[in-house]
Image (spheres, rainbow, N blue to C red):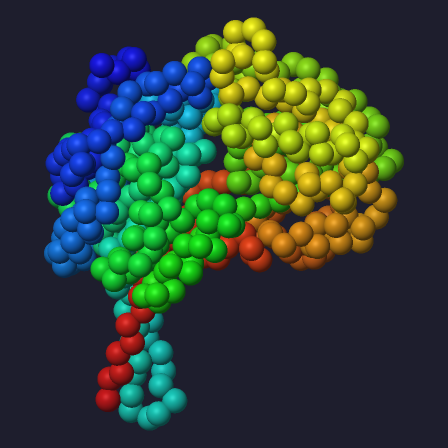
Length: 490
């Protein structure tokens, strides 16, 4: 019996979704899903092993032979129905997400709305997979190109956005005519299963097209998915280290891949910035979901002429945060996903302090009171940062904001470009001449200029350097799920 109470209790599914059926894993074993706010068990979910995955992949491969021939307008209609279904059930979906992920309920509503928008976007893209007619360099010939779906897609997603990381990938796959195997994060499998339920019961997605297989054997299953010859593409969001491992596995079958990996986003406030706007942007992109997003600001660079004023105002904002369980109405910031995440924050702060950093606010795990049994870490601001500190180069993925003064454009750009990742970044200026120069100089895939919010369905989402390759969302997102076929007419 689930402790998550919904208007539609059928959205809670704890078994594997294969070929349109909810089935127990072949071993009949289960693993627990925990509430990060309390570390208490929500319920148990069936474990998928290699046999279950091989079976599902065979089904998805066979189903692809017919699904790839469906009319693009029919696929568009399915996606549009799924979009409306998610919106109609957004409160229930947000409750599921809130309990298994921990983020505040209002943020969960925001994620569900954003996640649904990818289905809406790709409903509009499905009928618009255009080819080209190319004039040949040889007389009396014409070259035609067609875009065709690539095949079965393996979708490997993280826990921090259990809905949006799936829909951003699945929307493009369905629009192109691909079938899919989805491995949700073991910490947050319930949201994925709820989306699959809506796709099957309300959107009319055919059996075998979408398959969701929760498992607690991530490395073993990741290897299987990457090496399986019937899977033609993988899409992975996660750490750079895991991405490197998966790419090495995928190389055995020369599989097409798109990877959205780690980041170290700079947040740069120039001396001519609108400080109120910059402070609001910092609040959003550093502390949203307690800093557990791949595009969160990692290091806060503030021009030395406004550093003290900006720091003072930022401290006042952080003082107003209210830590708590995500489903409590007055909570502004929830827990980290698990104790390992809390331990990492503690280690980063202690390393920085041992090398001269100063804790301006926060800096410790919550060890007493009503939140002591959960995974809570105080929102933190550090100053006196140096390049030899672990926090300078590591992706934080938590509620710690290191503040660093800078004196020139060249200095702050050099500091950023020495980092070996480049997913997202932000800067604030009112100088239009600076606007394009800074953007071109920063080695980053996505840049927010005078805004702390990046992600939406229209954005080509992805990074450079060790932050991965490929783009998701936007008009470009469907391309990674297709292959180009060339025809020569003589």
